[in-house]
Length: 271
Ligand code: ADE
Image 1 (cartoon, protein in one colour):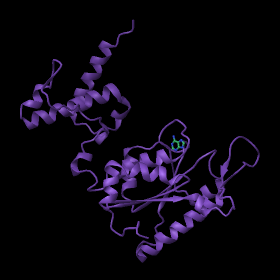
Image 2: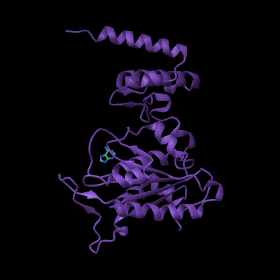
Image 3: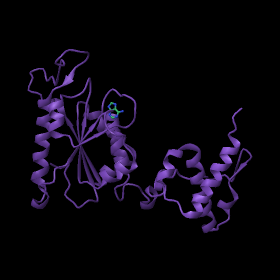
Image 4: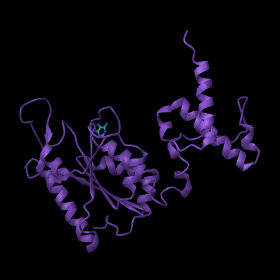
């Protein structure tokens, strides 16, 4: 299989079990993930579950036992697609790794919500298998047999698992060394250290009467760093205060936070 690349953690092989493989490949073959695929830093293997149907009309879904609306994806084609993929993966792995099964992520609103820490954890794997459902879901028996992780991308219901799988693949890919042009830029991202990113500015220096903060023009790197850190804390307090308990703040930064919180209490007066 030419999609499979042997290595030691500096790349990622994504496998997606789906009824709409072209949706996944067309989406991810574009922009930064597309370039990463071209450069061989990640690989994308979209597998059509329908190819494993034994039905003469290629059907993979059926009515739910017990009645109810919608259709359910049958266990067998999903299971067969998984077994076929696993056989290919194991035959390529060295003997020491052969007992390490790849994680199978079922994208579903019924899982914990995907976040940056999960992206980091998944980025350490060599292979990740995403299973995308449609209709009213997938027969529970095959989920119990093959799924290792249930993950949601948020508390809303989409028409299928392809977009959530693409969201997760994008977030994981940018953590693979070499995928972003500047290796350190994924470090200085929104949510680094559980703080939101500081505000950014570029030319012109004055835009419709609004100037760039003068500290950024000072060339004084320590002051710029301090200002950025302070702005990150302020912004997190304003927009995502729920992140602050997990943020890694120095004593001085804690004090700043208390001061900002006090100021907020003063300004937010009941009518
Ligand atoms: N499938 C449908 N909705 C979803 C969601 N919010 N997250 C993950 N998978 C889904």
